[in-house]
Each structure stands twice: as structure tokens, then as C-alpha cells.
Image (cartoon, rainbow, N blue to C red; front, side):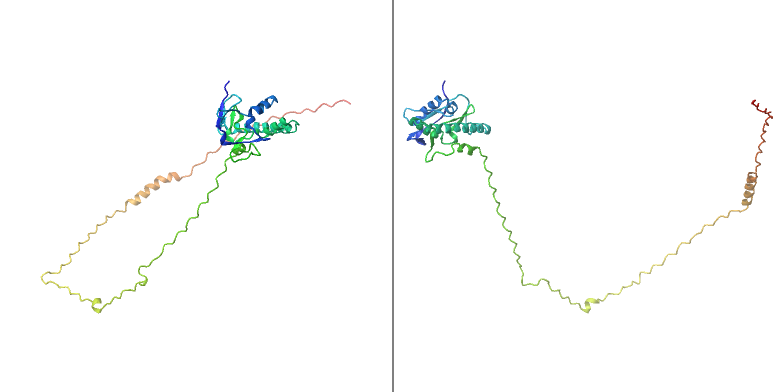
Length: 287
């Protein structure tokens, strides 16, 4: 089954790392095979398969597993955290295996341990992919030009997971003080209060001769009209002889109403007298 191409690049754009006088990339296929024979499949699946072109200056990297491919930056944060945890566990196994190989008396095992300790070096986060959610490293055994191998191999991945720093608050410049308007006196030499105007009054202005009224002889003076006489209305006299007659009539009508009336006398109630009853003496008991 055809493998998925993950990344391609020129070998001259990177710097190879290694150990024991040998580059990791020169023994990349042998390292993967040695890990497979040691039943370290989890480590093998993290290392992409390199394939060099005929000229030997360009290399293609293929995924060792099948599945959907996502770049490290395209994956969501949860997927990247899971991949980072898998890589941390894998690196722990690599370090343990590398130390064990160093302790072997065989030179080949020591060389394998030296190369394995640098095998997981890679240029940066752009060279790591998630295939079916699992991390796969391309250009492993390389670092960027003019750079050394990182002591913390996964440091570049952890840095990408950190939240972006908040921008520093920009201090607003203090507002410039407003300049007070300059007060300019157009007529500075003139007094602020004007002197009162002098008014001269002469005797001729106070007293002016008024012409006397001229009476015309041809026009006679009007005579007052006589007042109209006031007519007083005469009051009509009412005769007083009917008043005594009315008083006598009223007294005759009211007299019977004022006489006292006799109160009704109640009849005596007859009381029945009870007949005498003879009382017999009680019998005396014999002793």
C-alpha cells in the first residue's frame, strides 16, 4: 500500500546531527529496523520513512501509518496536547533504550545508542504531523542551519501551546495644556471709566416765555344747561282696620284646641278568692 507523503526538502537546507562520527540520517533506515526488531513499534511509528531522490540532494518523507493527516498548526489544541503526551512517553522510552545500549560492551550497540539519542532532533514544529491523531516526525536527525541540537527536544512544541501574550497597554500621551488666551487691550491708554459729559444750563433754558391765550370777542362763552327736575314717586298708604278682625278669627279657631282633655279611667280588676282547704293530721305510728 502506498504511503502518504508528508514533506519534501533539500538536504542542504538543514544541518544533520549524529554521534560516534556518523550522521543519524545516514543510518535512518537501519535505526528504524533495529527498533522494529527490538519490538519498539511505538517508537518506529513516530519516525517518518525517508526516501532520497536519485541525485541524493532531496528527500521525501512518508508516513509509516495510515490515516488522516494534519499539520501541527492545523490541529486543534486538544489534539496537540495528546500528541505531546505521546511524544513525551516515547522519548522516555528512547532515553532508557539509549542508556542501555551505551552500557553494552559491543561497539555496534554503543553506536546505536549514540545515534538513537539524537534521532528525535527535528528542525521545528512545522516538521511534525498528526496522522490519525498520532505524531509523526519528518526530517528527524536534522536541525536548522547554524543551530545546535536542543537539550529539550520538545521545547519548540511546548512553546507553540503557550497562549499568546497579552499586548502591553499603550500609555496614552498626556494632553497638552491649553494655552490661555492672551488679553489685548486695544485702547490701553484710555481710562476704563469715561468722564461724565459736562452739561451747561442757562437761565434762558430753564424759563421760557409762554404766549398768553388770546380770547376771541366774536365767540361767546357757552352757558351751562339747566339740570332736569327729579320727580319723586308717591307711596300708597295701606288701611290698618283689617288687622284686628284677623286676630279675632285666629283666636276663635285656636281656643278649642287648647282645652284640656279628660284621661280615660281604667276599670278595677276582680280577684278570685280561693276556698279554704281542710288539713288532716298525719297518722302517728305505733311504738
